Length: 438
View 1 (cartoon, rainbow, N blue to C red):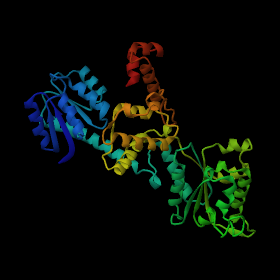
View 2 (cartoon, rainbow, N blue to C red):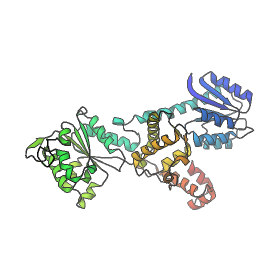
View 3 (cartoon, one colour):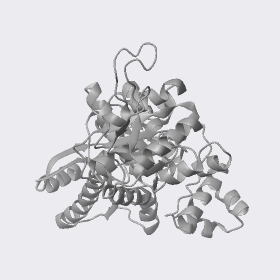
View 4 (cartoon, one colour):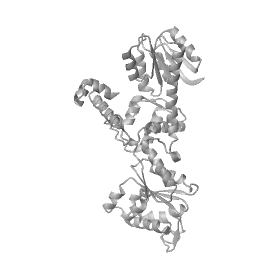
């Protein structure tokens, strides 16, 4: 039996009974509703994978139900059946999200063929979402083209002991990339030591990185190893390396060149066998040209460079991340993960995400706490997301047609949906406008 859960909506008892009998031969769960109000109530009470609705009903058309489902339950497969089939009606139905359109009268075989086709689409959507979550190395989430390039660079870096510089905006997951390099290498059983350079006061930086010997300064009652000795044999990750002072940069340069450190208060070098991975959210080349970062250190660090793309450039990854974080925090809360309405997802995908994945994760945690297992609606989002200006998605892997379609939609939205006004602004006719929106 197919596992998909089906809801049949039709005002005619005989039709409901016929559809129920046909579908029960192949699907495990089939339920029926006599109208839109009952269907909406049932959708809020339990999950369904497929909804089959009649077009014309006394208390509201099936198109109203279709619009409600597409705005609220984006993953549900939709089939419309009708005794008033027209080409225009079919086009309108497909435009609003109907995936299968079946005119009456139809045979049992025609119905089951359409529903099985729809069930396969639902399965494909679900499998794509779940399989993509596991796509990246060391737990990195995402399968966009730009992230696949990052994965290829991680693989190359893991086969080398060369120094790596990871660049990217704050919150993009640079430490995850560093961990992926280490744990994908032959040294995966050795230490991985992350160091946040911006969190260590300048006066303590040298002793924290290289350690100190007993009596080196007041309070040094015993000798203590630094982060470099702790990471001996493995990898050290220097996050926000640009925050180091020029004096400290000179000492780090010597460590990279000589592969040995001097503990504070000692003249005896301590050899270290270590892989150095550094990260920054600043342009080190520009910083070095302005005298804020040593150029020779920049070249030493930048042997292999991996640039982690911002979330706004990761086409298709946002929904996968939302699903993953929702499940993660729902487990912590002991509840089912919330569902996101179509309008909510549109707002989230249109947002620029200056804080990147870290900002998204924090927001999803807040939404799970506030909404629980309920549907997340636009009103649940923060003001700065709801009141945002539309963002154009300028990514290297997008076609000119994709960018043009987005622009046309934004102009139409700015005109309040007035197609004549939008066509006038774009200097095209209404027919061309319709074509560009498809």
